Length: 418
Length: 103
Image (cartoon, rainbow over all chains, first blue to last red; front, side, top):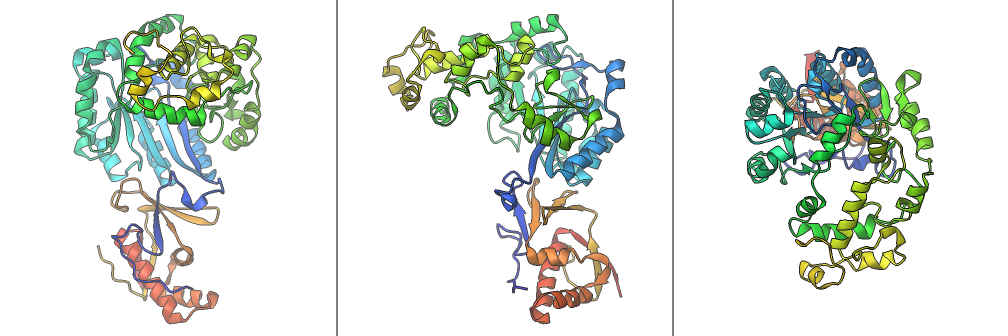
């Protein structure tokens, strides 16, 4: 046994025997791919709010949904399997996960398995008891809270739930009082559009916020494709391309970030459908025991029924086969498969599913935003279609480095503001 | 927190942490607050730490652990004893082990 010097608990390392590790880096297992990052578990689709933009929510008192939800025991079995498969973290999401009466039991169970827990919540159901629990048995990961407005009027215009504003702020204050780490994000919607600066100013006072709160600006249609009425409402909430570009390009980081991103990640995908990480480690178990390749994609052909097998079967057999799927839609093959903006464009099987009920139909809204960004970055001229561009590598190389350079370059955005 | 290591004492892994073995590595996950310096810290053990950790079964006292390790590793017993003491000191400071009893 090698000799060990005295330990020093104040050092970067906790001592020579005990080393602190950042689990997301998983340095111990580097190159061995044995650690899995995060398993999402959608504990329920029911929610205490009734947000105008939500892609998944069902009423809190939906008895039919409640009866179909996984039992406490079944979720514990899934958590045990997740730990045995070397997952480090689970993310409890919904709907509103705190609506489950067994939430506390499941949370403690997950933590006793040595799993970190991320909780996505609207904070309205956080009680003094829960806040104390999170302080005593910390989740080891920041909680994620969406703030729908900075005033009762805007907040409840989004949530359509009287009393939700007070309830959310009560919950948030309980977390602050108990020093339970959380971060916040926003959803930029007509009722709260004018409150962005107020939200950012408040968020900057939260000890665990390193950056301004991210804003959801693209609102997905219903994940179960269960309501044309709600889909129409959601479409009506989406920002115009002009508004979206104004937000996306705000600040100098956009140009630099996109230049780097595009040089590394965008290219024509060909007919491969799953060029993202869908179906790899970070899969999502839905409220009823189906494993989805990601949190959004619920197409029946690509979800795995856990009553027919295990999470391991899904990860090692089902999803690897799924990832071999090819696009067959002629429109997709003519456009998306040949489009070098893939990566900048958010077109994916999940968006296609929610918009069109297929895995490979171009989503016009995504296409328009990607093309507008490409024009802004001077990769496209007005009227050009990215899938017709042959010298796309050159175009990517020539993205301007500075705003002054961008303004002097040819290639004009159709937007007056840019 | 008391950090004096007693070789006559029996220690076991605290219920305040969860020990996970993954591909031969030991991952220590805090269950309660105050174990790590940061909220999201996990820990792993080096080979020496692992050999000791796996013997903290609430049955053997530390002297017996040292004896067992001496039979397994080619190192002077005094050096092994120093390792055990050093490691236990760290674990006690962090509340990762508890003293069960003295024999």
